[in-house]
Image 1 (cartoon, chains in turn red, green):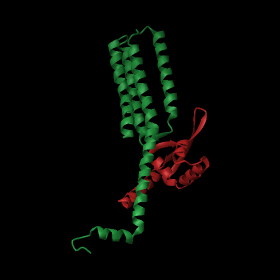
Image 2 (cartoon, helix red, strand yellow; image 1 turned 90 degrees about the vertical axis):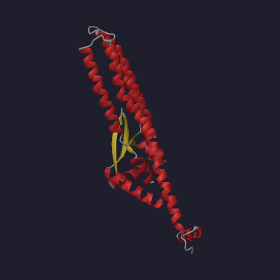
Image 3 (cartoon, one colour; image 1 turned 60 degrees about the horizontal axis):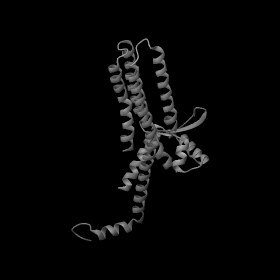
Image 4 (cartoon, chains in turn yellow, purple; image 1 turned 120 degrees about the vertical axis):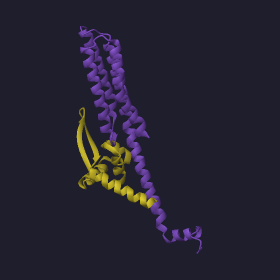
Amino acid sequence: MPFSIAALLAAADEAEFAFVRDSVELSDSALSKQAAALEAAGYVKVRKGYLGKVPRTWLSMTPRGRAAFAAHLDVLREIAG
Amino acid sequence: MNIDGPDEHDAEQHESAYPGSQVERDAAAARLDEARGAARRVAVEGSASASAWLSGLAAASAVYLAALGWFARTDEAEVLGVSLVFGAVVGVLAVVHLRRVRASSLGFSRRFGIAMGAWGACFAASLGAGLLIFPGSVAFFTVAGAITAVPPLWGSVRELVVVRG
């Protein structure tokens, strides 16, 4: 599941929490845990803001996260041949 | 073994000697497909709304600037009225389209910033030159409106065509 989340965020400047949740089909709490773990590892940044009066949470990948994911994709390409 | 080189039988023997290798290759290919699919989902999510916003802005600013050409410098109330309508239209466009964006594709902020910056520069120059030097000039404001529409239209097309692939 971290791969699915990372794949989405690697392709985005920023993605709303609800979009990531719907895309990877996780519950709010499950995604929160995954995002917290990725944030603790320094791969993801979590930004909380408001759209009007409605609170929103945005996820984005850090440069370290992008480099790690790109390296992971390189390994996958080597294996896939 | 075929002394002329490996043949199908050798390949089959190689595969059976490493039963996990095809599975690993398939799993890696599936992951790569998943990554590509994720990139497309992000592109589709953000590009449609951003493209609509930029197209709407292009049209609204072109019409607004063209309308200004019909007023003299002394028609302050009319100019104010048209300006308020333009502001309201842009506000509605922003609420309808930009609030719906739940993900922006990689590099979108830079592309959007360039399009909006170029639009802003053209818009400001058109207003300044038109109101100060060419007030009431239908020809000037119509041409200025068309030129001002180019940056957001280009941004719109870029979001749709380039991002969607």
